[in-house]
Every structure is written in structure tokens, then in C-alpha cells.
Image (tube, rainbow, N blue to C red):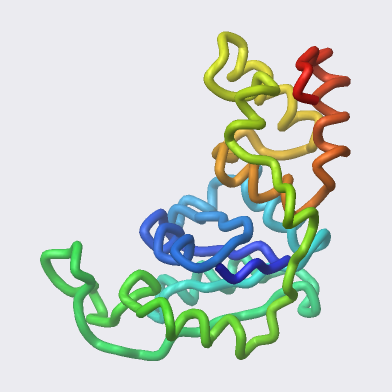
Length: 200
């Protein structure tokens, strides 16, 4: 797995699934043109750019470039890295027909080629508490998943960390493990929920 500091911005969930095969970082979907109406997500992306930098990886069709330019607008150039995929014509396996412009998108690229693209732009390798990361089991023990008040607790935590409510559990884990130490996170949870667990 390639563990990097920058957050990666992609268009859709299949792009995110593709990158998750080899990339260990926070990956945010724009849900296509929905980003135009999602003020909260736009604000979060700008915050990520300031905190750690972002990498924009959209398809190389007209829609992809429109979304790319919209996200980049107003963000300092030194906070953004761009990855562009080549114009390769074909069809993704899950689709019945090619896209409107006939080009393969991010999900149509092989992992090895995408890894090369990330390495070529000089990604920042991340190592925040890499040997002892927060896991799904920790979230359960801390009352953030699989428990009676987990939804409410997670909502409180997202608010405390100034994170948007749309953040999935996996994205939350990625953010935590690349933004703070294990001890700092557990301390925050203790303060929020008065967690009493011998494990911690």
C-alpha cells in the first residue's frame, strides 16, 4: 500500500474503490457534478488542501476537467497536485457501453499505471503512528460503531473535529490516522464520551 499525506479527490465511488486497492489515504468523492451544490464538501476539500494538500484525479473527458477546475478554483497552487490519465479509448468492465466520449476513466486504468502516476508527481509519504493505527475495533470499543449510541457519538466526534457529517467510517479512520496520534484521538474520545474501558 502507498501511504501518502495528501487527500485525493475523485469523481465517484468506483474511482475511490479502484484507488483503495493500493492507496492508503483519505479519498473524497465529488459524486460528479453534485459537488457544485455541496457547500459543506467544498469547504472540507479546501480545508484538506490547507492542512495536508490535495491531489485531484478526475477522468480526462470534458466533465472530468470541469470538475477538476471547479475544485481547484481558489485553492493556492502549492496546495494542489494534479494527476492526469491519458486518452485511452475503451470501455470499463462494469459498463455496457463506452462513456460519451469513449475514453477510459480512472477506474479503467490498471493499478500499476496509477501507482506510477502518483510516484511521478512526488507524493508526500505519511507515517503518523503507522505502527499502531486506530482501527474499526477501536471505534467499536470507543462507542463509535456497532453500539447503541454510536451514531450520536460519531456525530459529536465529527463536530468536535470540524469534519463534515457525510464522512464515512473508513474515511474517518483514514483522517484520524494521518492527522493525529493514537493517544491524542483516544484522549478526545474520553473527553467527549467519558469512555471507561480498561483497554484504554
